Image 1 (cartoon, one colour):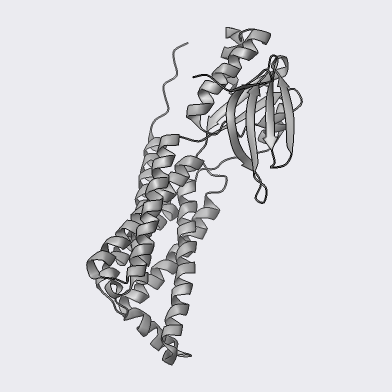
Image 2 (cartoon, one colour):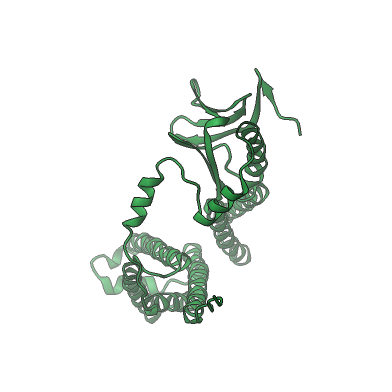
Length: 351
């Protein structure tokens, strides 16, 4: 496909928002005769940076989790809104509620489709002897890979192809020696020693999340002060255990996936705490006769039927999905970690 040319430059990547909240900054990349031109458009002004092919030491491209996380969040919201919309249509909830959940479902489905078409996100950085610069225009793998292939050909025309011995050394070392690598090496040398920990606390968190999922499912059809008390006790225990798990996993040998899942559990609990506070305030306003009487207020909250309350139904559906996904994922990751930790070390080849 022919690329756009302008004043001797060939466009390598289209403009893309780089940064800025008030004024959108868009970045585009252009190939010149002997350099790469980076154009940052700030609306009414532009700034330029040139990276000469002869001075480029390396271009680092790696996939980022941002796109996957956004897709996961959209999928989570889509499931929640769909499961809220269906009971609303079946039980005849207010039309406004159905319009809101239906619109949210359509928007999330459209964004998921767009994200799937665009593909995984990535980060690209160009390095010279004196600086490193993020190429924000290359933020999707399906565009970045062919663009970097074209950039590589231009660099090899000036510097020559990379020697196979150098390539082997780079692969063994992990990364080529770039500007500032001594500082980064020194920082890595100061990292604390990792320690092995027991995963009992993490397992308790994920098991309790599955228990909370069952409790929320029962709460959809049942009500009562006992269920409310069980939910409060479960939430308190989850909060304490999650904090302990986050403290224990610092500087540990736990896989990154397990540590991230624990942070997701903490975020889920924070959301539940905020929703619970808002729900309690709404109940207090709806039942002014319980003002100053905590016991009667709790009984009023426990008596609410989820099938008759769209708000409570939405909260319970969110709790079911989040607790099930995080709890099941965490237990599965812990099982993989246990199997990997108990596996015997590989045999050393004979000398």
